[in-house]
Length: 280
Image (tube, rainbow, N blue to C red):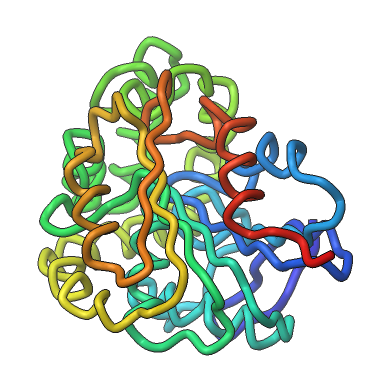
């Protein structure tokens, strides 16, 4: 992993390097950049894949005390990240909460972004999304120490597989989700950051409703990829997003829950390749 010092603090990121089309991949709450490992492995070396671990609960470096850890603040941090790495003509890709960040960036112009991919993500009034998101945000009302005690339950696989945890997010990715839990279980600073994120989400229930009203202004290619059997992110929201975006197109993925990068990485990689062709 590489590291970069941004205004909010230290951010780690994976970067395959190269001169090809740039794919920037954003993960969701309580996840890190490893969400994308299997997808990146399916993409040819002609792409440059950049995946930051954002301060969303599975990061390993505590953020600065004054950092804005609202989703709007983290979206601004992504913009800073793109600027600092001088990434151009980016295909910006987001799954779960990462898709919410992509929507927020699409609403503010995002000059470095050439196209976007939204993958089974928070949208409209599904924020926080489903039983999983609502439970997590509710726990954010606890003091950080109590929040940590609550999260200790996720050491147990049967608890992680509950619908209120990761059970409705991924069919096949339990080993990965277990690793994602380690920072928040082991580091007090990460627990404090996570509680700040969750409280900011609770304080802005209309954030993505307001963002959706501005999506028709994003007149660049947009691919919406949705899990046909998603229990957390309604398929109807994927169809609505595709309809709102002037160049939107929808692709449905079978045999997957929300975290398509874990459940169907090869299929997702193929969709990304088709959407972002390598210049000949």
